[in-house]
Length: 318
Image 1 (cartoon, rainbow, N blue to C red):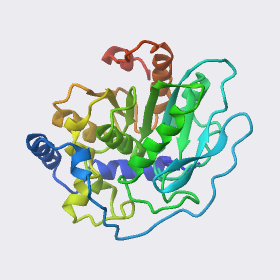
Image 2 (image 1 turned 180 degrees about the vertical axis):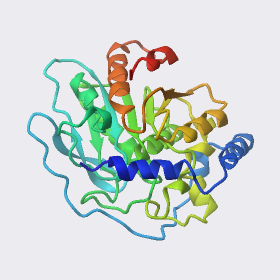
Image 3 (image 1 turned 90 degrees about the horizontal axis):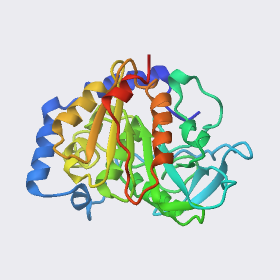
């Protein structure tokens, strides 16, 4: 399974919570960006990232079980990228769909089909179980894909290309495409929401405000390059969010202080932040994605009606 391992990524989560930048820096930078009137898309326009390392996976994604997921390829700026996609639904009509970005090496896809323990289920299986069309895209430089890993940069365009692929499927409702991700994937989907508002709702689990805390091993750019880090860090661009975004994290052994920092930094009503009681960075996933799946199935109107209350989240883990 190419996702966060419980011990290794828990260590990473705690490291992220102690980012090398002072906590106030992200809030100050966000305020400065808002005052300057620049969105993340505007700030990135025409800026070519400067990679100090080149990295790609090399191994093809494993074949999924027949009838559970299909291995497909979708067109993206970096070339044709691999993805897993649930099979065509048995019932006719247009169906809701979600793109899920895993944690850890978010560029790479692997085993999303084997049963996982409830306290650490990063497979987003709740969406498949609910009958929601589910796509797990790999991104540039992952698996045997073309391109190089850019670390939260060009990957944004790959995810938007995955959404383009879904929208063209005759059984997907293009007005009901959602986006979700966990840990590094949660950070990445938050950046996507800051670039493009096309998704009906975005669900980000355990992101960070400033990516420098991930460390040089996970970032192909210099940690001392202020511009490169800023353009990858969602804490600086909360004012750029134009569609509904929901951020979740557990209340212990998690990136809780990062989510609280994002909440404190945000003046944008489009972004809502929730700390789930009695959950950690991993156990928050299974019950919360099950709740989200139910809300997606009920979200059938012209505009999204999805929302969350502290009371319903309070009862998720008892």
